[in-house]
Image (cartoon, rainbow, N blue to C red; front, side):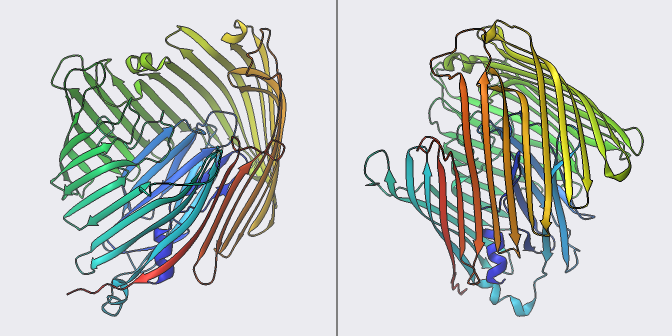
Length: 610
C-alpha cells in the first residue's frame, strides 16, 4: 500500500466541514483502500453550534450487498455532540473499483443538514504488491493545545503494520505524551506519563488490545461513555481479548479506567459469549457479564449479566437486551431498539430503556424513550412525528444534587413543490423538569414554519417561530415566543462558498428568557484534497428579560463575538499541518479561548518476516 493511501486510513486529525449550525467530523478522509471481505469502521462526530437542542437523524447509504454489522449512536452534553459509529462489511466478491458511501444528517423537518461522501477503493491483494505492503508509514504528530487556562505540548505517534500479509495479522499502536504543561504561571515540565497509550494485535480468529480504546460490550453492561461525561473521547483504559466474534465467539475485558461516568475510578472485569448465524446478521444470544466494585453505598461487588439478541441488515435494526444485578429481584434493566422502513414510504425508529432504581450499572438515565415515524403521503407531501423523554438515574443524582427529566415531541408536514421549493410546518414542545425539586425548569410550545429555495448558485433558508415560553426563574410567567432565522449560501466556485445568517427574536440562555439577535458570516475553501480552510465570525447580543432579580453571576446584557477557524494543509511531501482556533476577539482570555496546532510527519519502518 502506498504512503498516500496509508495516510488516508491512519490520520487521526479529522477533516472538518463547518456550517453555520452543524459541524461534522468524519474519522476518515475522502478515500481509503480496503480488501474484499474485510470490515471497515467509520465514525462521524456531529457538533451542534446552534442555541437549539440537537435533534438530528442520521442515515448512511451503502452500495448493493454491503452491510452494516453494527451502528452505535452516543450522545454527550459537551457542546451538544453525537458520535455515530459504523462497522461495515465489504462483500467478498467486490470488484476492483471505487464505491461511494454517503453519510447524511437530517433535521426534524427531514431537511438534509449536511452529507459527507467517502470513496472506498477496493484493491485485491496481488502477488507483486505483497512485498510493498509489508512496510507502511507511521504517523508522528507534534501538537500544541491551548484550552481554558491549560496549555500542553504533545508528542503523538500512531500507526499500523501487517505482521503477516497472507494471514491478515495486523499490529496497531498509538502513543500520546505531554512534553510541557503551562498553567497561570510559568511552563513546567511534567512526569512524561502518556495521556494515551494503546497496543492492538488483530487476526481473523482472535484479537488482543491493551491501553486506551473505545471498549464496547453491550449497552447495559459496558458502553463507550456516558453522555453526562465532561470528556467526549469514548476511551477506557484496560485490556480486551476476544476469539472468533463473527460466529461462535467469546472474550474477556478488564478495565482499570472505565469510559463512563462514575464517582471514582473503579476496576471492572467483563466477559461475553456470542453465537451468530445467517451471514453474521443475526445474533441468537449474546451473554455478557461485568463484575463491578462496590460504590460508596454498597458492601460487596456487583455481578451484572445480560442476554442480548439482535438482527441487522440493510439499515434495519432489531435489538433487545435484558440485564440483571447479582441475580436479585428489582435490580433489572431492559433495552429495546428498532429501526426499519416499509415500502420506502413509511419509516420508524424506537429506542426504549428502563432500569430499576437498584440496578448497579453505569447508566446515566433510568428511563428513556426516543421514537419517531415518517410517512410519505404523496410524492410531494410527507408527514411525521417524534417523541422523546429521558429521566436521570435518581439514586446517583441525589449524590450529585441534580436530577432532570427532559421531554420533547413534535409533529410536522412537509411539501415539496416546483423549482425545488420545500416547506415544512411543525409544532414542537420542550419540557425540562428538576426531579429533586419536583418543579418544571422551563417549557416551550411553538409552531415553526420553514422553507428552502435553491436558485442557481444561491440557497435561501428561512424559519419563522411563534409560541409561548414559561420558566421557573420567572414564576412561570407566560411570555410570547417569536423567532426568525435566515440563511443565505452562495457557491462562489466549485470548491468555495460563503454564507451569511441571522437569528432575531427570543432565545434561551442559561435557562433564562432573552431577546436579541445573532449575526454570522462563514466562508469555506476546499482545494484538491490538499487544502481545507474555513473561517466563521459570529456576533451575539442578548438582553435578559426577567421579572425577578438576576443572579450576581448573570449580567443584564450579553455581548459576544466569536471567531472559529480551521486549516488542514497537506504538503507534496505528505506532511500535514492542522490548525484550529476559537476565541472572542473582544474578550480574549484563557477561559474562553481554544487553540490547537499540530504538524504530522509520516515515515516508513521496514518489517521483515522470518
